[in-house]
Image: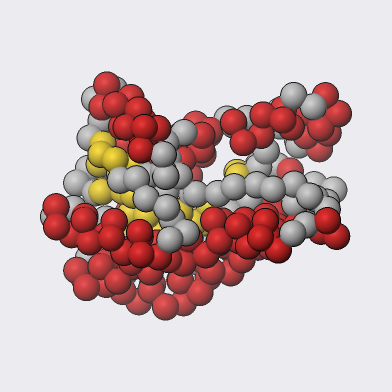
Length: 255
């Protein structure tokens, strides 16, 4: 492996990483040499993910906490401090979806999506960056956006607002943290074949729309995001900050 992409000696925290895209990010970074910290609210799912990664020969540990709970986030980072674990790479991946027309959407559901997909990136990012700045070695923050960071689709209003916010939060982080050697960037996945999209995958009309709308003529796979994540987590991207890279099979490039 080129030393530019070697993550040996780095520790990465990936939120929402017990399964789906988050697990794919964790696996990709681990294969590049990083120690990975698996996070989700479900303790059992975290333990299973850690066991799977260790069985593959990777260095992994679990850290269950709710990314929307500021006190829980503070406690999690305090626990890492006590264990002498320093986070060099943060991937803010935790996210949920709630499909509903805006005129029928309840405020509590709007707030839940915003809190999980956007506010959590601020809460967790703040704690990680404070420590990166204090250590003086820099670091990497990677926020997970979406196609909806650029374009809207009916019935996913709060998700669209949150992911648009992720793009601008990434730029705000870059504006404040790049001078400390912390590069903040984002990844915007296209339509990926994950558990969160099961209902869409099983909908023949929507499946046909995705394949017809995407120049690649297929859904993406979780492992196809790993290369971009490794790039943004590595020394290869040390002069890249405030950007969002779309991994979407070409969807946003065409009308």
